[in-house]
Image (cartoon, rainbow over all chains, first blue to last red; front, top):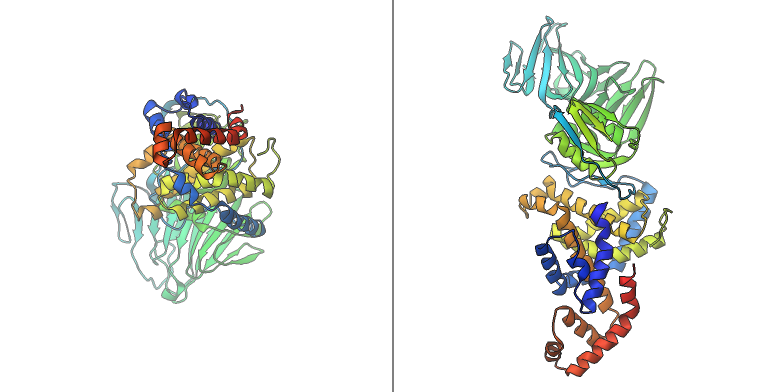
Length: 385
Length: 175
């Protein structure tokens, strides 16, 4: 942890010198600060500038408060580390990681950057029309047809109430390094994360169950309520899972390289089913379908914001292992990540980043925790050392 | 403070808290400009460290860890939208706040003040006043004037003070 471990010993020596009316040589010879800073520190200390504030703090009383918090914590064991940002949206700048294990002083290698081709993700997607033709959607590309329009950042289907069944489906594919927002013809809003694919009808048949398929990847659904659609339910299919909805908000995560499908309910009510099982979720509950055993387990998520912040342009990692963090980052920055064996990929971290940060900004913050020694970027490959 | 890597007991954690808490609150106050918020922030760090069963190699390691964690938490808060609504600081300041030189210089100034206060609190009232003025670079003459006592009395108080503080000073300077 570098110079921060010198705070205590340096302060004790400066205090001893000043009490004895001697020159604080340990400060004078310190290489941490420049001359101007040293002079300023000395004048702050001598003037007793902080003495009055220090006296205002009742350590005994506050220890009792803390002791209570600690004991409650032990009983409930819910997550306490709270972010000012947790309840709000966007606008975060890079934030220092807070590490949750002891680490030792060590020397660090400077990162090696060769031909850095790792780019920040953007709004982009490929729209596959009913006739099989592809339309590239990205910033600045305007597309409009009879039933759909895009400004390159979002895709909006025109409201239409069809009387008869239609088999006309469109497919929206989000590449690595992309994200997209889509408004379906029934008013349902869907945010799609990098490396995801959604298949949906151009229009829904009035009064009939609305069905879409998250072919793979991650999507956040804000479903238009069934009361506005003559009671028509909304269903999301995904591999071996089916989610039935009655107007609600939820997040489904089913990446190609994941061995499970997570469905997190933010608001309302959904039921998650497989061929053999059916579970109803209440808000803050997350179901995890293990694709190998085909079993569904339910957990409660204390802060759904961390899991759904991606659609607000934020990565919010709450107690996530390093390897999972890099998996998420690799999708948005469309990069290959190699983690060397000596790196402890199971260490857990807390941190929030804006998705508009460069990969280097994020790496610098992670490196500052001293859990990684260095990193190397070569073209589109990131190596963590 | 303990060496080794055993888990903290509540008792040792209390000692650590008593040793660092007031300074950390003042340190947080430098960033947040609100004492109650500063106390809450520091307490959250203490809860988190306890919850995660973090252990420390020694006093220096623990002190550095807590200052750094409090700094990070304060900066997180300043950068959050919740805070931006109140707009008490220019964002430009944040870059300065985030430098190692800035936060360590603040930490050392506050920590040193706390150590001095601890020493002065061990002294009788008059001796405490004399030492306080002496630290502020008052000469014996000026102290005598300020406290309306004789120079010899000033010298006597200093002697009393140094005798009382002998053990504490050797604790401060030991390697």
